[in-house]
Length: 344
Image (cartoon, rainbow, N blue to C red; front, side):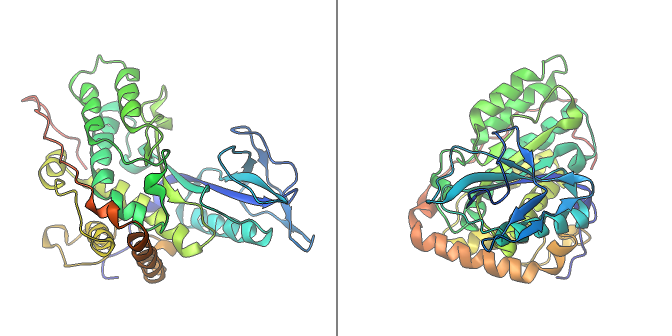
């Protein structure tokens, strides 16, 4: 890796939800949906009690989830992380994934891995217009790299109704906030949410009452206990968010138009090149970091990308029709004469 670590990505505040099935009573009573129980300890298949990892004084929670299918002797459990950040947050996540494996957790095709990121921690602003600019670009860029996001899972997440590809037209809903400060945030938020749904991007909390709590949730990843997969999913989320923040709005409209890629290899390499993880050097952005990579994400990039490409080739072999989908680019929206994008 020639580019430096992304120190600003290390400031991102994030959370992870890992859907699994676990042996009954492996962590005591599993909490209710959105009302979980803190996980203090677990029991291995050999009935040995082990302490659960935590992040400082914060603990993971266990929650029920009716969408998870279970084998006999197992129960559905969605493990929800506390708010994490930095290299220590990454290590806390990896420790908990190890804990899940130790208690006998496993995943199937009904399980997902969701990553939520605090938008203000990425853009360093609580201003609703700054968030609107970020959301408008994020919808478009996530759609541009959708096949790379799906392919790295190696599964059929692109066919899951809770992981649908974002509708690029949803980006125009944020225009109301950009051009008219009197527009109530609830109105464009409702439009964006209606267009994106609970798909690849969940933007239901992007324009909330307190903008300090503005978030975006990435829902396209499949459930996994594989460390390299988890790390690559995180790096993808951080990398896309950081890349989006550094882009000018007009740059997004002029360059992110060629949606289609012929195969998984090119989809993955297009993503990695855009994030500065590889590919031909870009002299214009020669001083930019490897977006999203810091700590373990930076040092393990070789194993992460190797695993991701293996999954991508598996995805292409099973779902070749995914690369035949034709998507039309979004037409650039007209802008007022006095419009200017935030400084980055």
